[in-house]
View 1 (cartoon, rainbow, N blue to C red):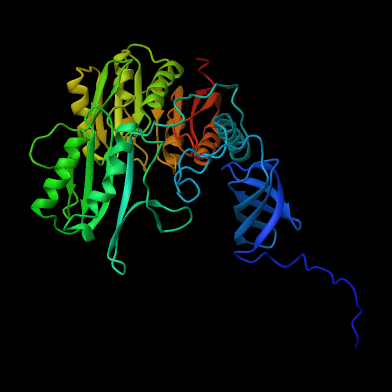
View 2: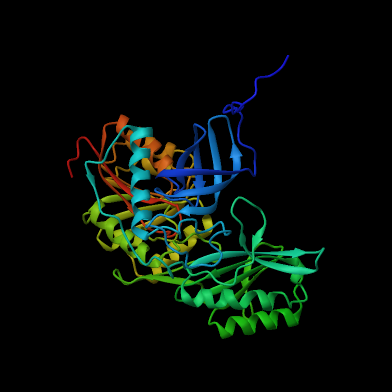
Length: 451
């Protein structure tokens, strides 16, 4: 049979191929900062794209009705587009929003929080609060660099993971770091590449604050010369050197007793020591604003019983105790509980006690015999589903939830709403500028407590 001549019909049902170059216009942004458009009737997410742009993009994942792609070339650029300050922005998996204005980043984060609360919990705060803002660059007080020995080429790679890859970006700058740590980062690769034990290096953690430190993780032995060279580098940059071998404990080099890393809350005149492996907030400016806001929102009164869950080294507990509250801090890590107790003693904080417990389970041991007027929780990304249900069951009057994941915050907000709690106010905190990470704070009040 002869086929009719002329233009053949395009098969729009066939998915795009991985690596295929496609052209499309973008008209909106996703919650994680990707441009969204349509290609052959399929919703397409383009990493690195902005609304109002026409782009070519390379397909990285494709399904029948949805395509994920990465920006290849700009045909028409948005006036909102900015030149990234970091030369590694296109590859590095850390800061994926450097191409957009800071105010646009904040808008995305506020929109993400609102959408998650509506979608998962069906709630809207009675009042949206203004975002907490700090420096857009030079804010990060902690970072972890990977070190990987390339045996084929006999060279050491030092850097961050590439976006959507296990390969490393060998960085020579990182402008989101505080200047003192960025200076150290720039000097590290050359020295590490000269070490006798370079093939056994794992990762290097840089910690800022008032007692900055560099923690070198190594699975193979380091020679005396290696330790001396690392020590000299640390000394030049004003940081302590901590070595972490196979025993998985970090030890200060050159002395058995060295000051622990330390940060301060200047508004409260409080000082906190912590271990190299302890969780602390990476953004000192936002941490101070966050603590101040938590104190204002929760509005604890002298003599009130307050529960601080995921209390860490006492970041919220000590300021609340300073206001006269009787605070019970609970943390899953026994080491951090010990550190929090030390911080309370060192700051002469009264009325605060710390306990270790598995925070994935109900805390009957600490809640059955005590009525708490307020609770603060700052859980990891998986949220605190079991704990918020327990707090609601105990009818804790005021619950302040600090979140690093809007999806689990929304899920837990739904639990509280179903138990009669009002979402009084909520807002975002720009803890990680230049990234899509959303930090938020939400205040819930039981129906019987009009606060």
